[in-house]
Every structure is written in structure tokens, then in C-alpha cells.
Length: 66
Image (cartoon, rainbow, N blue to C red; front, side, top):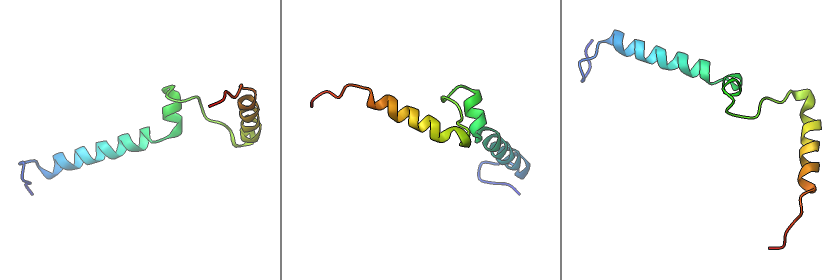
């Protein structure tokens, strides 16, 4: 089967499969963390402690008048 731009079905399938594979590989939170695009992944068991520390730290900042 030929398409408007004269690409074969095999070429189109290869493109689609490559795009899907890249999405599956790079869609993981571990991928972005491994690239240092964020500050890391918080374990579910540590979430409450880290959230408490973050809120406590934010309360220590001086609130300036607006």
C-alpha cells in the first residue's frame, strides 16, 4: 500500500514502532531522574517526613509585607 508521500507501509510501521518504543522507554520517572532532570523520586514511606520537613522549612522564611 502506498501513501500520499510515497512511503511504504513498512517505513511507516518502523517509524511508529520506534516512536512507541521511545515513549515507553523515556516515559518512566526513573528515566528523567536518571538524566537529573528533577530532584529524584521520593519513596512512598518517606513522603510524610519529607513533606513535613519541606513545610517546616518554608515556615522559617521571613514573610515580607506586600
